[in-house]
Length: 157
Ligand SMILES: CC(C)(COP(=O)(O)OP(=O)(O)OC[C@H]1O[C@@H](n2cnc3c(N)ncnc32)[C@H](O)[C@@H]1OP(=O)(O)O)[C@@H](O)C(=O)NCCC(=O)NCCS
Image (cartoon, rainbow, N blue to C red; front, side, top):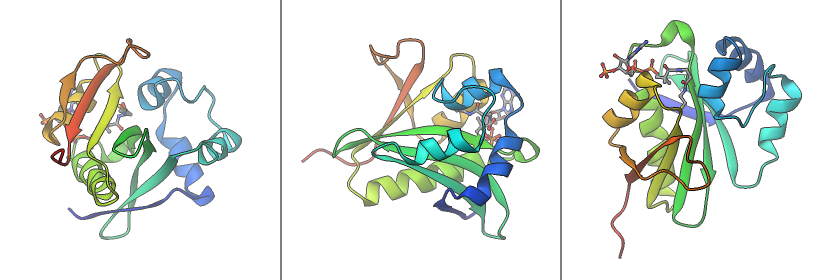
């Protein structure tokens, strides 16, 4: 399945808002970066954050099915955040090509290591990231409540 990531637009808000079922899922999705209820203003606010890009994932037949964010930490390191697949499309392996597309994009723009945080017990997310090559590493001391995963995408010179 080929997946295209296009910049998250205001016209994508309604779909994303409809994919998150409640406060608990919002926490799994955003790790606390968004508070319930989500609304247009809060989503607009994400675009204003430095180093942050939000993306809408579209299948090669043009169906919008997912969302994720890429966050640059420094020149070599980036983080994936706010990963979600539309509820009716979950369990079909779509998160993997979406994550792969984001990792490819980051690698092509100089990233050497991609990290991400997962709420403990979020098995679909953990399994999906493991299948994309991420491995668990020591938690970030600043965010010890999350499972931290890492994927090296280039060999250090
Ligand atoms: C996490 C998420 C993006 C995964 O997307 P997806 O396209 O459904 O992922 P997949 O279809 O590849 O499924 C991932 C794995 O979880 C498994 N899985 C699916 N639903 C599951 C469930 N309810 N419980 C346990 N495992 C489950 C799948 O079998 C698959 O494992 P496998 O590859 O070993 O068979 C999706 O579940 C989601 O949007 N969840 C809500 C938001 C969220 O939690 N985001 C994570 C932010 S870190």
